[in-house]
Length: 111
Picture 1: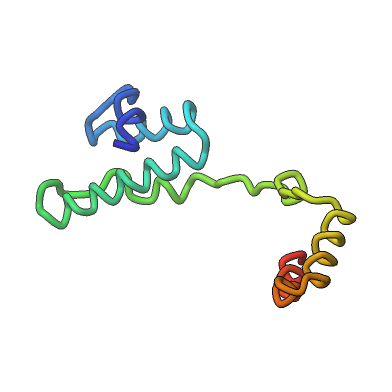
Picture 2: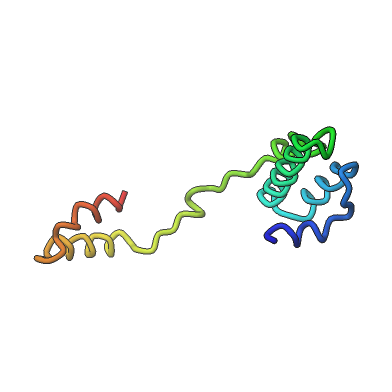
């Protein structure tokens, strides 16, 4: 069901059109989605080959050709607290008679 939307939108639905399918996925979806779809198509075809339903896997190796761009860490970092807020949180844990044993753990999470 997860990939049915992508499958429904394919311009071709036969194994002979594997290259057309790959090109369509690359043009119309993100690199990650295209790669995952092709990996699943290849896995299904591998099963079909082992089961004697088809003679070869036309999707073999296609997903490896798609390179996923690496995200820049600083742009994608989630920093919910400022440095001052982190220091206040750690100090409150250290000062608490009930929660002070969490202070080293909270300090470790900072890094």
